[in-house]
Length: 182
Image 1 (cartoon, rainbow, N blue to C red):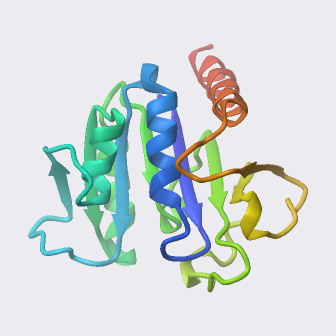
Image 2: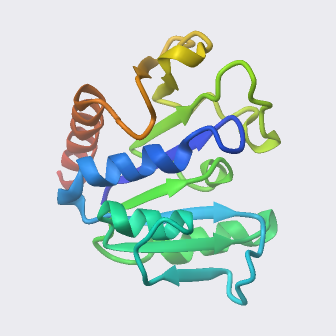
C-alpha cells in the first residue's frame, strides 16, 4: 500500500491540480483519491464517494485524471482519526490524500507541500506540518520560499507536473513499498 499526501499553505494554491497530475502520471497504482475537508459540502455522511468524472468538483477531477475511486471526507478534528483508521483498514488500496490535517493521523510514504507564492495566506492547519514534508512544489514564476532543506520542484504550472517530479515520487514509493513487503 502506497500513501501520498499533498498539503498546502492556503486555499486555491494548486493542491488539486498536483493531485490530479500525480494520479495521471502514476496510473499503475490505481489510486483511491481523498479530499479531506472540515466543511460538510451538503453531504449527510462523513465519507462520500464521487461516481462521475468531470471538472465540477475536486473529487470529479480525481476520477477524470484516472483515479480508481474518489472520496470526500467531511470530518472535524474529533472525527477525522476514526475515519482515517476506517479507510486505511481497506486492504490493498493505494491512497492519495489532499489534506493538511491528515498528517496528524498518518505518516505517508511521500508528502508534498504546495506553496502559494508570496500572496497566499497560510492556513492554520498548515502551520507546523513542515516536519513530514519530503518536497516542496511551487510555480517558478510566482516566486516562493526556500526549500527548507528539502527537495523543491519549480514547475511551469501545477497542472503540468514534470517528469522529473513524477519519477522522484515513483522512486520514493517503490523504495517504501519494497521495504514494507520484506
